[in-house]
Amino acid sequence: MNSGLCQYYRCPDGYERIRWRDALPTTSGYFCFGRNSTCFGSYEGQRSSPAPTEALRDALSEVVIKDGFAYLPFNPAQVADNLRHEAYVGEWRQGSLSTLSRIYYFLRPVLPVPVRRHLQMLHLRGWDKLVFPLWPVDCSVDNLMEQLMLLALKASGASRIPFIWFWPDAKSSCAIMTHDVETRFGRDFCHALMEIDDSFGVKASFQIIPEDRYLVEPVFLQSIRERGFEIVVHDLNHDGHLYRDRDQFLERAVKINSYGKEFGADGFRAAVLYRKQLWYDALNFAYDMSVPNVAHLDPQRGGCCTVMPYFLGGILEIPVTTVQDYTLYNILHDYSISIWKQQTAIIMEKHGCMSFIVHPDYLQQPRQLSVYKELLTYLDRLRQDNNVWITTPREVNRWWRQRAAMTLAEGSDGWHILGTGAERARIAWASEVDGNLVLSLDDATRNTSAPSGAIAIEPHRTPHGPLADESLRSISVVDNASASL
Image (cartoon, rainbow, N blue to C red; front, top):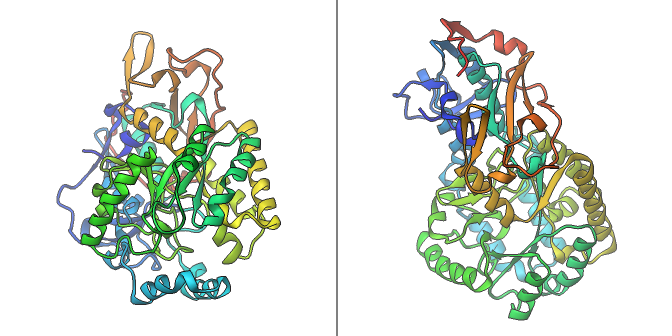
C-alpha cells in the first residue's frame, strides 16, 4: 500500500509500514490526526464530520500497531491528495466565477483603486473567522507525513529511518521571490526591480502577461534572461475568466502554451490565483505557481495545506506559501514584514518552501519599496544564518524532479543516494525522541558522492506535533515487530 510516506521523504520502500482497509466508504468528511493535522477523506465507519468547524474525531486514537504495521482507519494518501488538490472546497469553488465576480472583472479596468479595494474587502469579510485551512500557514499535509514517519518508526522497531533530505547541499529550507507584472507601469519598473534584487543577491521570476495588458517586446524578455532572472507566463490576458468554462479554457490553453515556447518559460501562474487543478493536463509547463497554501484572503478560497512542492500529474505545483504584497498593504493595512516573518518561521520549522509574490506595480511608492527592501534584508539574513536556499522556481522544479527520481540503496559501507543530482543530495535520518520527530543531518550522513566542504545542518526537532507523548501512548500496540529493517 502506498501511504505517500516514501514519496514525501524519499525513504526506502521497506519502511512503508502503513496499512488501512481497502473498502473505505465513498463519502468524505473531516477528522483530525492529532492536534495539528486536519484531514478530509473517507473514514472507516463514516465517523467523520461534514464541516471543519465541528469537534473532529481524532483518528490517532484508533491506530493499531500489529505485526510490524500501523493500521489506520483512513487512507493517508487519499487525504494528502484531497488537501493538496483542494477537494474539500467543492466543485462550485474550483475555479468557477460567480456572476458578481464576472461583473467585477468586466468593470475592473475602469474602477478606481479605492473602489476596487472596498469591493475586495466586502468579498473577503469574515475571513478571520475561518478555522480551516489554518491561517497564516496550514501544514496539515506536512504534519500528516510527520505522524506517518513516527508510526513507521514505531511499527518497524527501527531506531531511525534514512531519507533523502528535502533540499540540495544540505540547505535547511528554500525561498523563491516572484514578481507578477500586471500593468505597463509594472513592466517599466522591472529593470529597476532587477537592480534592487541583484543588490541583495536574489534572482526572481517575472510573471509576464502575454496579451492586452502591455506590449511584450523580445528585447524586454531578453533583458530579463540576460541578468539571470526567470520568465513565467502569467495567464493570457488577466481578465479573471481563464477557468470560466472548459471549452474557453482549452482555447486559451493553446495560446498560453504557445507563449510558453515563445518566452522560453518553464512555468505558469494564473491571474488572481484562480485555479482548477483537474484541467492542468492541458497546460504544457513543467510547473505551476497558482495554488495558495491558505487562501482566506484570495477571491477563490481553499488552499493546498502544505509548504512543500507536489506533483499534479506531470506538472509540479510550487504553492504560494506567504501573503501577497497587495493583500498585505490594501486588505490587512500592514506596512511591515511581521506577517511574512511569522509565516517564514512556520515554513522553516517544516523545512518547506517560502514563496513570495511581490508586484512591481505596487513598489513605486517609497513606503512599499522600503518594506520590500526590509524583506530582502531579512531573507539575506536567513540565507546567511539559517542556510536557506534562495533560488528561482525553475531551479526548485529541477531539483524536486531529480529528488523524486532518486533512490536510497544500502551497501556494505552504509546508505548511498543513486540518481541524477545525487552529488548535491544528502542522507538524513528520522528518529523519535519523547514523542517528537527529530530530523538530523550531519557530516557522517553525507552522500559519499557529495562534494567536500558542503554545509550540514544541525539536528532539528520539530515543534510539538500531533504525536506528542500522550498521543503516542494512545496507540494500541499488538505483537509489534521489533526488528529494524
